Image 1 (tube, rainbow, N blue to C red):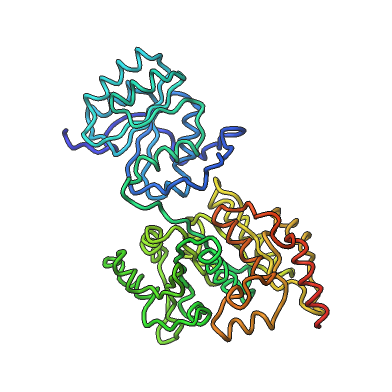
Image 2: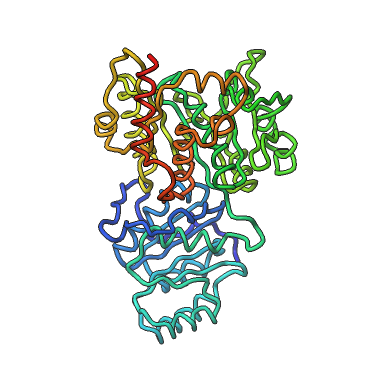
Length: 441
């Protein structure tokens, strides 16, 4: 090849500054296995589209958070345009080509494309012919995948993710970030109890990272006093790997490991926007569930973390300031995560005696989301747990509040189907706890 870059070539491209239109209707309907979509690694992707519909889907795919590390360019034209283009330039990691040709013509065109493809380049065809014989022939000839139009962004992202997931590698972990709508609402307490519940009740390995560098409480809550943790991990990004991460982790239970914050004021902490990128990537490889305990605040790095994770949980108390802040966060995250559902909402400390509160249903209604659970105000229970360095489930695994944390853990891990015939229903649990709290006031 002559070493020309893609930018040296004069091929019509989709205007990168144009706001892409999101496909509507069934095109955006997420499949049942959306939770299994994989993060795409740092690869170069070139797409050659013949129709406006497929063009829009690929444009939307390029903006999805799962593609944030990939470099995607969308060109007009099908196989003929690709052959001309790669006659003068090296091929990228992945080529996506749309073709409206019938089977015989499509196979002929692929022969021409094969002559200009570099070794190691993968090809995905988006065709308009639904023919299993054609599919088998394409796979036999080395095509990585064949998708039948119309395609959805979930299909395309899923296909790319599957291509670049090593068969030997463990599945990428699912990352959930917890953040408070207001300072002091108990977001860290919720995050820690949910992490413990995932490890204990769902029996998944969990890594929890306390990202509140100055005032983090995870070490106290889990009765750990590690000498190193998050700060050391982000201070040496060039040395950070799975081996180093293992050395920095504190083992809380058989399945739960903690990356603690220094929680000292000996230095000031001003993480850059990219500070936690490498750490989160490596944590994904270390366990199927990753929980991030974020401090309340809004900065470049918190914004980026929240935009990139699989689930966001906003913890709020039922008052006006929390409502305003939660509304702002949900609206902003909707723009940052256009192809994901809204953040999860957890109402905490519900039923404080003599405190005017917004009703849980009205609070959730104003945000346009449904609260996963409402956790009652129980200062004795939570205070005792904190002082003992225990989780609620460690004090009493059958306690009604422990059941609420189990419910959250099921939702954020995708196991939202709650076992029936197991004790009281969620509504009855909350009602019983609220009555108990008022009776003791």
